[in-house]
Length: 458
Ligand code: BES
Ligand code: MN
Ligand code: MN
Image (cartoon, rainbow, N blue to C red; front, side, top):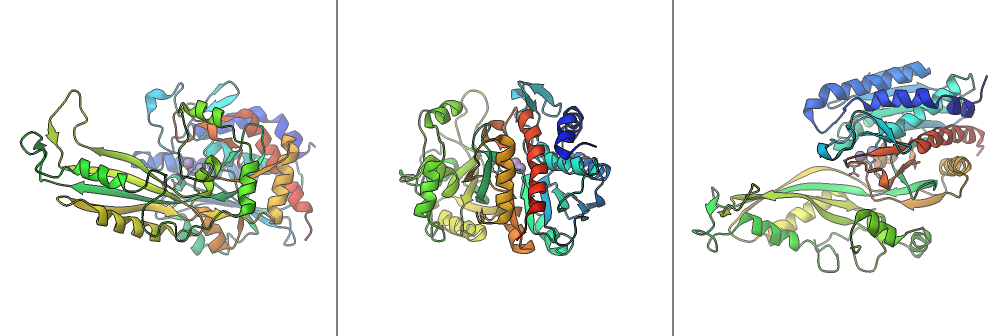
């Protein structure tokens, strides 16, 4: 009988083909037209968990998309229990015409799997399913207790998952949560993420006259909603990149000297950064480095803006309304709801006269910081470093996984963010991909992590 690592090495082709089947399901949670596909993806995950030999596999109904559970608790109560979290939903594939190969027809090019969800998060969650399989199918005792929770609403803010955790606290009880839904610092660089930013997302509608007007007849005499919205947006930040919303920074936990030193010691190649993004300069809050700006400090951005004539040629019109979607990335200890209220209040204060303003809130989530001394984190770093043959970097990331803070609050569990993606994987963009090498090494790292964790004695 082979060892788990040997089993993983011997079954690459099978794992790849299975992942391809998973990636072919267009489980876009944001699009109601894909409801059926979302359910298909949940069934795929459940069937997989059954096939590898997990117990009590179930597809749990929620008010939104189903949650898939499974468990294998044979290691005994003196061994840690790891709850493995991932999401089977994906972002919409738009803009479709920019994909080199179709988003839901996985294709290998240059050692990478191209498909929507390849990295975020089907490929990464599948890593752990296969790592567990490598124990159960080789008759190797799984050294820790394992539970899976794979959800289908992460890309829309996980609205049903926190209530689900609350209602199923006992069933989901664990010593730690393991998540692979983040990125490594650089290629071939094992990295443990110890911080994620939170999120506040809102939408603004500015309305003026009761119809689009002739811009010659009325222009200059009636407030233009698009102008008004731009005026308001320009007042959100000053020329030094500092957010101007009163109270916005009140609860921001400042970066300590030690943390700033840690940031400074991380590799950051500015020229390469500029080049991959095709921009001529970085931007951000005065006094902070780029790595600090994109993960240790909050940010405020317009995500979308529309209004007025968008067709061909020139139409002289004074539009009746304008809209924008605006989001803030938050750091500890900012409260998403509070930040929403502060921005809403500020927008009303700076609204020019002659237009009406409606602000509404979308989903949000809290930032997280993981205690670097947590034993699970040490086992994860040891496994990661061993498989990649390199020293592990610890860093914070700018993206958000809203449920992670809730794991701490509701399940009282620390989350280990063991990401195998790369920031260059084009997640949420056309041509999303995942390196086959990281898919392979990820499975080995996961298996090794369970082995090391099983040996751990307090
Ligand atoms: N996997 C990402 C989050 C992520 C990406 C963290 C890269 C760190 C590095 C996740 O699927 C995601 O896209 N989250 C959303 C949250 C939102 C939809 C509530 C985000 O960050 O925009
Ligand atoms: Mn994700
Ligand atoms: Mn995502």
